[in-house]
Length: 598
Image (cartoon, rainbow, N blue to C red; front, top):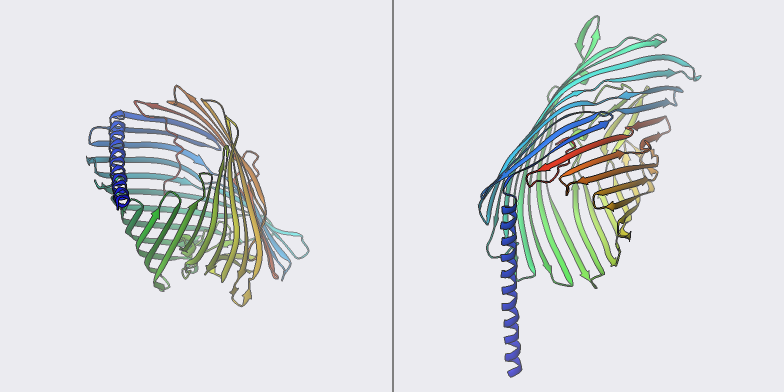
């Protein structure tokens, strides 16, 4: 009896000690948060300037002012960039033994202007409201020149012409977000978060195409296109986290996504000196998708073992509509997505994880949009409004090993996917048309391995290796597309810090040859380099980055079929950027690249 009393008293003492320790940690966290706010009070900011080749120039300014209850922040940026691509296409028609070759250079040049403005309002220690907005305006110029050559059945050059494109576009984009977070007093991880996000993207684009005959009897075809694209996306999300009984955690929430798109596309051909609308390629595409999702997750975790179980339910209401032809596609479906994950810690150096999840991959907008760019009339890409989502059951088992200067993560997986989205090429009169379709099932197996090793104090190596083997089954328009294939990729990143002020990073990548449903993608190897130099305790930073150091990143895609052959090559080439940034007040230097904000 005395032993039982002592044990009970001991348990109560442990419980009280845990409560005291939790209260102490909470108090320390609150004090650190207060000190951090105090430290950053006042005006802080940074400025950056970048220059690059091909042309990639930008300036950026970041400011924030923090008071007891407010944190006001803004970012301004402007710049100009060029994104050239070398393109080569070859179409060979086995029925006539004629071929079309096209080769040229495409540019996408942009002037861009960015503005971000927002504020955090600390109502008290447990409630924060954030309101922010951003606006981006892009002015595009897309010139291109493509040389076309037609060879007859005797492989003799019969026709040759130059196709020139002039494209101009204005792209306004803006985003606004309202976020509210409440931290409950009962536990440091007990909180509620609500956010509402709105996005808009517009494009007003006009293009002119003209063919100039160089050899043979060729009809001079001049064309024009007009595009009026508008997309609105709105997301409302709420998440609630409730920890209880020290080792248990409950999460629940929901999200409502609304996406409305309109794309008015028109093609005009020059006929007898007048541009006439081509009804076969002109239409207005409307796309509306609403997705309501609700989820709940329960988790248990102690010092050795943990498990997490969850389920998400989603209802999707989708509609696509072509105004001119009145072609409509409506879909409404509800899906359940369960998840289960567990982990076991054998020691501080070895742990094991396993998991299952059901996933959905929704077709992207451009996979659904049936319109295409007529830059190349012999290699056409178009969307499919009737495309359905992919569904995947994923099983994974992994382990983590940590030994002194080496840490490794090893995973094996099996995934079963239905309704696989593939791009299928059809061919008529030397014109290839690529369209995404739902094409059967895919069983894939693979392994993923990554490791981190520090052979010396100032050198760190990060290595990644991925291998996958897939078994495809599918039939499209009476043709079987069954095949088995494998693919592997690897990456090695070397980080060297010769001094506290200098960081050097070198990344090598390799992607193996990959078999596709109708052909193959060639292997690819490329390297990236980064250099950073910190001056004055990190307030001033110089950056140098070189993407694709040896200009070896080339995408070669081959299509082999009984009645035709197609080859497509694209290369962007080497990009070099030099940047300077300086932080003032209590701010740190900002690296501003002027990248797109979607």
